Length: 204
Ligand SMILES: [Zn+2]
Image 1 (cartoon, protein in one colour):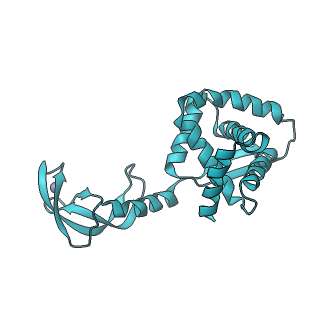
Image 2 (tube, helix red, strand yellow; image 1 turned 45 degrees about the vertical axis):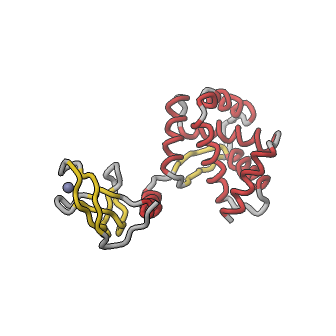
């Protein structure tokens, strides 16, 4: 890893110019890859000939991610209130000082973990069906809105789970909450709890 400073000169490949070019590191607004919005005042290497951004140093990546994060649309779901109670009880089981903020981390962790494993993908529908059996949705059941900003990667994971299961966001979240319920509340997995506890400690 190298550290770069403003005004520093270098060399890099520039696609528009078709080869190795001289570069200068300057602060610049960098558009996100999907073209929606930009990260402001980021140190980047630009091509001296065409002024395109050709190098994004590692040190600038967290700032870009931060800006991206602020831009991310929250996950929205409407759930029977019992699911939020389960999430809060799971958060409390992990760390009795956890705030409702920890819901977001728990859900993100489980969504990500599920999306990473192909075998788990198949269980999304199965767990959704078990969730519905455990928490039957009678008419007039109290519902609550869940709205939380999650990292782009988690939002992508959730989309993958929706696509592979053909369930909507709310139903995928029910499935994930059921998984959280069985692994943290019903039959707690100690290594998992330990991992989540150190996670909670770091997050404060
Ligand atoms: Zn160029």
